[in-house]
Length: 325
Image (cartoon, rainbow, N blue to C red; front, side):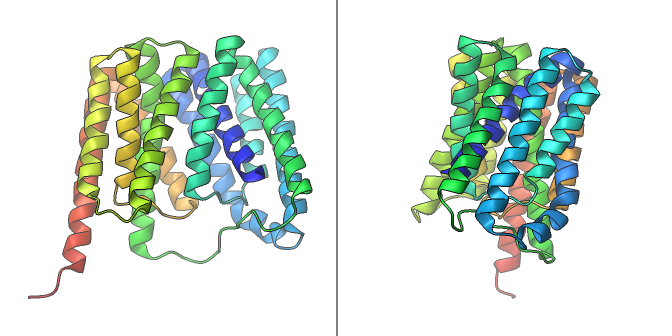
């Protein structure tokens, strides 16, 4: 339960932060916010994991969730009093560092995205963007209580040690492509689809639905095509450039989620510094692309690039596994 709550609170906060950053500093603000979310936590992760292994897991989880709840409460207050953007980002970094030792599995991340998007959408429908930060703080406080009420080993810490080169390459592809899509979803939703704040949350929910559906197909053992997944995700991202109606955009985001679940880098474990750097570069690339060529062309280019990367990774996998001669 605590793991689901932390994933839900994290995604509700992530969606609200992306919108807040966009309104504060445009597409560049979204990219900077994503970098602040990724890099400090990645750098702090080894030290956080070392500390986590010295104390009972439930106590560490409860303390981590409580610290993140406090950071989110401070962010909610800061947004309410119009604190400078850089100060909000400093609190975001503290929020992420407090949870640096946590390594959520795929199912928790995807369920959290779905529930977090729904929570953010409902909250923004009934209230304002500002209240989503408060709601996220409440969710993390509940996670802290759940951790104390259910001691055990529900939190799995990432294991230290160097990863094999193919895995690192795959993490770079995953981190960079997902960060690019995160940034472009906000741009497409606000500028092309023309939805409101809560509409952006529902589109993220479509992405989560697609990832859960795709992951279920993979888990069932049915034969799947990584190339088809890359083509599906890339084509859906490119089609967002036409500025579809909200329902059409939701369907396209579902397709993006399914494609990501079937992609050749799906199913990997938690990220590390390499993936955090890739996320930062992916977000910066998306922001730069939008600034240079505009919203619609950026979506087409990103969709084409995702398709190309997916096909290349699939071809690489086939060539490595093919028998000699």
